[in-house]
Image 1 (spheres, one colour):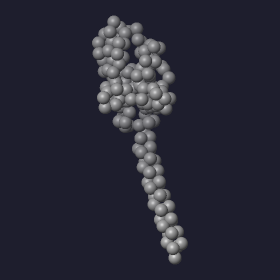
Image 2 (cartoon, helix red, strand yellow; image 1 turned 135 degrees about the vertical axis):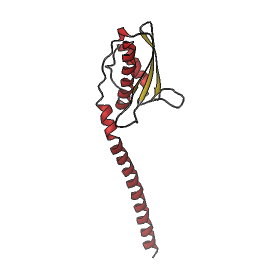
Image 3 (tube, rainbow, N blue to C red; image 1 turned 180 degrees about the vertical axis):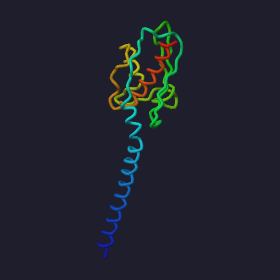
Image 4 (tube, one colour; image 1 turned 90 degrees about the vertical axis):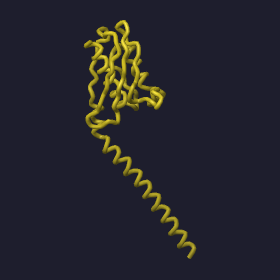
Length: 152
């Protein structure tokens, strides 16, 4: 009799465990399906180049706002002094609650990505591995700010 009760208890435990694991899997799959269009939109973003030699002094805001989802929206503020980028501030996006750039992967942040662009004087730089979509959204926001700096 005790063996039967013990087996029933083990079976119930496995059923509960499977229901929990199944529920977690369903939430993860549902989240990925919900975000699929947004991921595709950012993945297909084309980052155009900007002529860093034609920037006008001032402070310019650029943003990327997704049409398919808002998870990767980014806003940056770029300051140009003497025709050179003197500062880039992430206003919205990969920042913590204190406004400091968040570490994405391998100890890198969007600030590292921006520094690569400034060093190359080009937006055609390698994105952060493991954070491709976040990198592209922020590069697009930077592109939009620099285009404003060119047009002024």
